[in-house]
Image: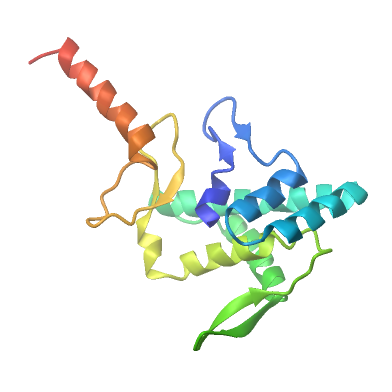
Length: 191
């Protein structure tokens, strides 16, 4: 989920990036689409954001700040570069904030993390997202974080392929596009 959240700034490395979190409603809908909030709390948060536009703007600003810190951390790791300390400090700030709202609850013979049902806290959609980032950073899966090899994409993804050599975020889009381009190059320049 955290990598999808980083990808909410589309075309990140171009002259014209596309912000997919243009409003608080976009943030709340992302949380719903990611499965961390159900429809009813999202509707409540969206209504709350309309009643309190300034706190909603602050929450959106926090979301973007958190996303950009995640971006710096995960792109550095995907490119095998040092993680910027400032980005990690920002990310840790949000991890600590989320931890204040987390608790363990029993679930079918085991326990799982759950966040307080803080329906009036407009930053509540951030908590499970940053928890996802923290869990990925502390897991064995971290070595499989990749940036799409397409120069027009570069989205982050978790390579869960059998041999962990996946190059594209989505084979049907970026991968197919690259293969078609290579095919046309070979047809124009047969050796």
